Image 1 (spheres, one colour):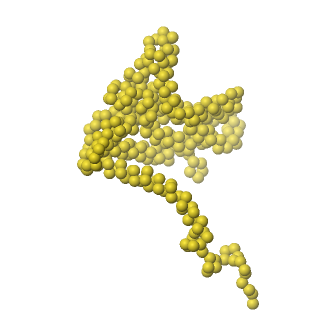
Image 2 (cartoon, helix red, strand yellow):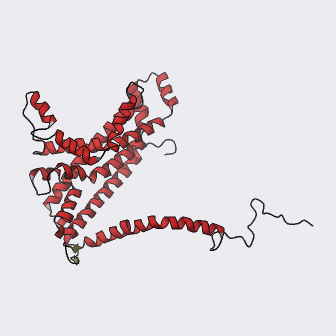
Image 3 (cartoon, helix red, strand yellow):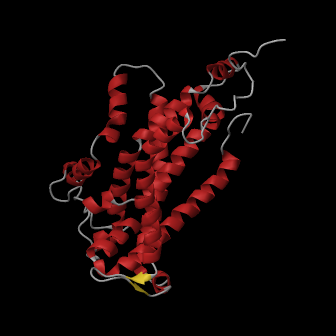
Length: 322
């Protein structure tokens, strides 16, 4: 007759008195502590994300002023979207900045990532310069660029005059506003994508390059045949996040251009988020319509994201498992 083992062997069934996640057990007390730590995060998500989003959706069906309760008006705000000329201007400018700045961010970040692959004198200084926009205050950078492109006393116009040309009114024309805003957005946005692409290049096996060099492939051929295809997952992530970020462009045009007064320069830089800000906070009597504009922007970002996610199946290579 054999006696039972004092402790359960590996794979043995737990004893009848053993408790796992039932109230009162040791594991339950440990799990409860974890749930308590999650409460502040869940509360923040519920209050500032889910409730705020639901309230914004409901507000888009109302006429809400600065004072008094919102009044339900049905789909009137959405009908107004179809005939709002200022919304068309804001949409045009938003898409225009995205079409210019996103390729600029990708090209500049890719070039910086390629340069960081090599060892040269001043390499650490170059890397610090690349990462500088990510650690500096965006407001300070935008103000510096604003002073550089100032019409009368800016250094850019001073250099243009020194070469014998007349100064340019950068903020008085669509081309000038587009050029300055796009330049600032690219400068503010390329640092983190450059680090992401550099990390993606580090993951490419070196033996692939060695085999290509043995076959006589030059640097340009190696870049387009090896680096670029194997870097497409990182490139897709950079394109997607940069596109979403630039579609939400606000701080650059808000700081750089005059307050919203439907002036020429403001119209050239009016974006969807800037227009939403004007409706919700400057003209506070249109908070309901501002909510509808914000949902229009949400649909735009969602649609662009879906298109990019569809395109990744054709252009993004995830290796043999992809």
